[in-house]
Length: 410
Image (cartoon, rainbow, N blue to C red; front, side, top):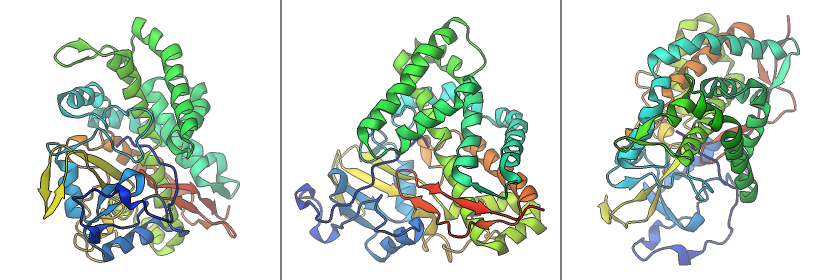
């Protein structure tokens, strides 16, 4: 699930000239998916869409369809025959995020190059390092009795693991974190372009030449020396694009899920108490919190003219599947806004569906599970800092920008 965020903007007047003739007028809505209309709860804001049509059309970002129900999202995300991944975010990003934004056999080839690094055996081998890093990061601020969780933990843990997988110099972690954040979250398109350029330049000049000469047991070496399309070598652009996808992924799903989970637990002491009294609940609790806090608002491109539930989808139409709504769909989950660690059915779309499902899902789950285990051992009682207001944003991948926490130090 390698996505990038999008500029936040809201047009007070819809440009209805962007509505094609095949779109019924009664299905046109003024919806800008990143604009929370001054609200701060992403999920309560999105939930209001369930009061309208299951599928509607918005003129924003050049015009696109929006599906609001779990069933349609699952269908579209699974159907690579009719829906292309060549554009997965709105607006279109300045660079192609290979793996996620490729289709057909070449997409499978790219995944096969990196899949061994995300296998159960590989993730199991990493777990001790994930645990040690998690403990070290918590210890850095534990005695202070407070932290800004997003910057002090959520972003740091996954980027360190990514640097390890890519075998990048650990001293370059602050640089990589800074430029990757600018590439993913800047609302200024020129700054995004510059940040992507810095990442490409860093990899092309500092990393690729040495890995070509002296390959190691890392992902970048595997990509450089791997084969695609029946035996040809990967190009430098492909190596850079796939590496970028992995870096983006490291600062995408896991950091934001860590923050949404922690925000929920900070506001819900009864749920924390369940984990304190019975740590064996952590795997189920993790899945339920993931279910409740889907992150991705993905787009697909319609490949051919087709009828979809009585609507005409034309080739080239953009269809957004905001999975933010998938986990809170009352047609799919009873009482969906309630977090119930004992919920019997917690299956979700948070890591995608079909051939483009998140390749790093096992690693993501390991990082989230280890975090919950180690955090609850050390800081079981915590809350939002007095006077602090968490800031969450809707985006291609929803994210928490600011999460101030406090706790008593024994």
